[in-house]
Image (tube, rainbow, N blue to C red):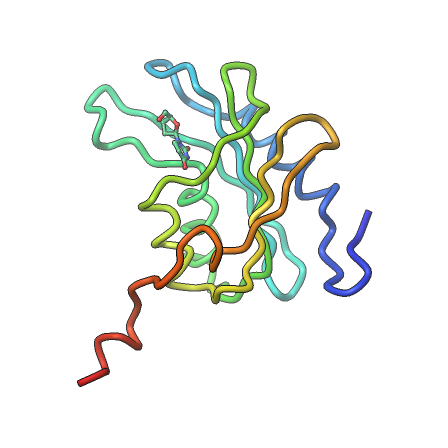
Length: 142
Ligand code: THU
């Protein structure tokens, strides 16, 4: 299913986020997170959380997806779908660090789909989840 105005394939993104959660490496928390990031040119980059015995070395699913895309030269994005839970599907709002990484590459209209179940999601925007984001433009102000 696509959104008429923005041509965002919400259903496909949701399904790919659930699929990505299946790749989660989370032996410590047992909380499986998946993300599917849509670039402006229509490509989808997936990511899962990857934990580490040294807990601080863990990386979230959202950042895995962003870093995969950016490392392949893609920097413009329209939307991300995120899901998580012990069974890999359910409400998993992005952590503060991931919101900040999103703000580095995306504006306030960037869509964030929180996938709450199979074929179920809520839509948010980055501006709504991270108001008054710190960014490069602020450093240029005197
Ligand atoms: N996690 C994510 O992957 N994304 C988030 O935005 C929140 C937390 C992961 C990190 C860790 O592997 C597990 O969820 C529990 O915190």
